[in-house]
Length: 117
Image (cartoon, rainbow, N blue to C red; front, side, top):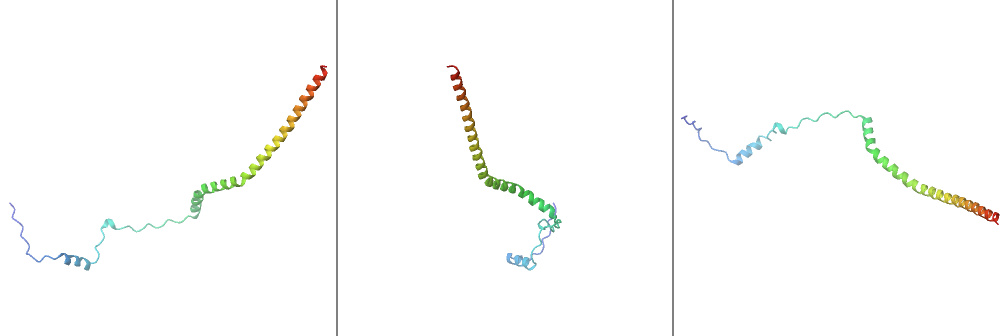
């Protein structure tokens, strides 16, 4: 069997308060290597044209929707009036044509009846 190691001479053990006080006197403990953050990378150059393109691409959908909404809002009353005018004109034309057709049919029927007497 191996011989036991010699014991160091018994010295006075420090109290917890003494250990904590020594730690504060030495300053803050160095941060572990994993906690050290690397220096930030230098900022890339600003390309104004790319930023404008990106902003415009992001806004294009909103702009399209807004323009479509405004056009519909502005054109709806105009188109309704135009449709009403077209329907009115079509009814007038149909009525005129129907009168002509009925008048011709009546004339033909009267002429036929006169010829058979």
